[in-house]
Image (cartoon, rainbow, N blue to C red; front, side):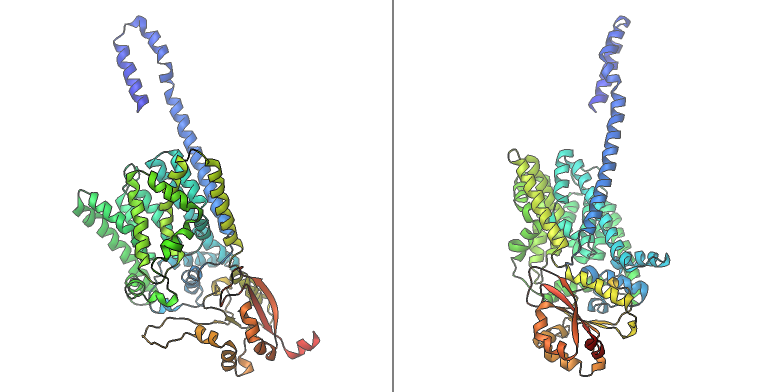
Length: 541
């Protein structure tokens, strides 16, 4: 704008001078005449910077994907990849959530499409089935990262945007989660991209239809995704002058289209009309039956969950809350509102609050931008502490349940008498992935743990009955030798207790996999694979 004004002023001034002074005025305006090439150069510079930035973040998230080789929660397999595998290859296992129609097929359909393409191309190897969905999720997370950077560049300036971007990239929890096939990951990706189109003061990309469509899609994939958006939607409605038009011409049509799409997809795969979003909210929020899988005190998110997810970003987040402009108060309200709502539910997990982490990075970026002294030590501390934690949780902690699947894959493809092979996983239910990481109809079984939906007070799942007396359970379950599985998979803490059964039935340990440095009651530091040997083979050894 300043350059255009300067040019206009020069023309006006030149018209007031006589021709004898024209050359002089042209010389004084020489720098103004050459502003056009400078603009062009600046645009090329921005373009090249954007290309390099895009390539950098894509490469980083791909590396991120391959540097996360551990398991986090069962849902990253059982609510996405396992469902997709059954959709395409017609064998596998669906958990009780699917028989009760608490989950929708929209999210697994993404991975089922990938599986189908690989199958049609004849490239459906087990390794591609494992890694291609995760790479797809990594690319979506890279797009979200770029949108967050672009948004902050619009709202503030490049310097602030870079600090927010730095905080986003070096967050250990983002690194840990952003390439996993979790509904929470997709919820976070859609939240960031929707925020890019949300009507914020100073934003040049606001688009009510686009952002509401993304929010609606996030709601379809995971109904609790609407929780962080309640304050943002209310703010938009409150500030909108044409409130009726906003509802009738934007929110309602978007909601109708996305909900209809969800109903049609679920009708195809369930075989009946089902509103899974209502079932999900009824079970997890209204009835709070999620407490069956564990409960925490009301303050857990404030005292443990939120500080752990933020990690060493926490002091920068608090500092940034005092520095950020007033227009970002809505972000802070969103974070606090989400924590309060989730605090009212008994069952709590770190991943539930993952979608508000990008909001926190805005305040962390402001903190770094305003640091005057100790800036370099602060940056070094933030980067190193997060990367050490990210690499440990991504490469070391809880990796055994994935590593053991390679042993089962080898069993599937190398066993000369595959029809006689079978596997029993005597571990807490859903500890490992299943057929999505084997891709062979090998007979497998794990301990079941569906919640009680009938209201029984003395209800015990199969896993609980097993752990009450593992040895007794085994002898009662396998009274006939012909029923014994050829392979048993257990955590190391169980070995001593069931050793009489292992010895009497000629089981021999054939593989050991490290799992964690922090074993719990039912989860050991290592995973053992036991194979049943025939007596003739034992004597030969």
